[in-house]
Length: 320
Image 1 (cartoon, rainbow, N blue to C red):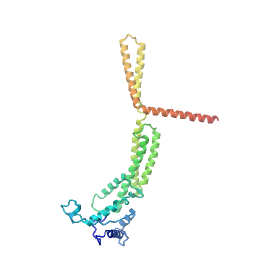
Image 2: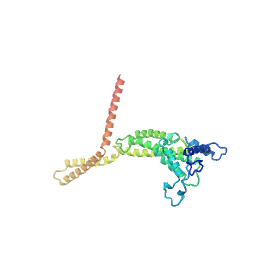
Image 3: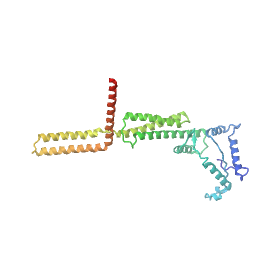
Image 4: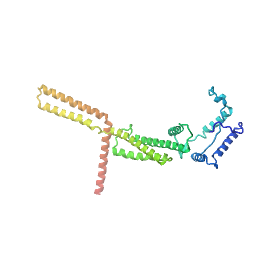
């Protein structure tokens, strides 16, 4: 889009004006003897599958006055007609296609990274950035998107295995193996996206992806450890020991002490309260982890059945 274009031969024939725009583009992009800006022309042609040009005239002298409030009626008619044609060209449903970078369509979630990278690049406003700087900005944004998509892919799959909504406990060795496989899969996602830019920047972004995925694995491991039915076994052991000792002492007191002794009766009653409280506490803990305990014992039973079945087949085969 070229602003304030003033070189149309006839500003009433809009088809001819668009033809002049195409001729101007061919003239600008074509090879020239002078090497000035030649690299930029080559990079523009190399970076985009299709390049078009549209010349937009000045909106009129009314817009530069201090009292201009944005009234469309005060704008130049030629400018408005060209703006209408430009918007129809850009936003027509036949021309709206997904942005493609290195053969891969950019999704909405990635667009923010590219906008941020370009905004930072033009933030200084001192001079127009070089093409190499623009390529670096695009590469940086692309690497950021690659990291985010790789980590998101890992989290989505791991959440189905050991996420907050899961209730089953997974052995640490099995969870580690799942992590290893999903890490490899997520890095494949990263490698398929981070396909241009310096090797050093890509390797740095890849390391960032690995670090973030490992941090996510630590979180999933902590969630999984919390589901272990034997986690915090000392919580059961202490009240169980207290209750058992209190029960034994009460039984001994009831057996050896005289029924007429007030001291024995008081001791027996106190000990009964102690072991009753201990066992109630254990019952409450067991209820909170009933699902984990049930799943655990069910897995033990299934393993035992499988072991016996395999052992029986093995023995039969051996006898045969």
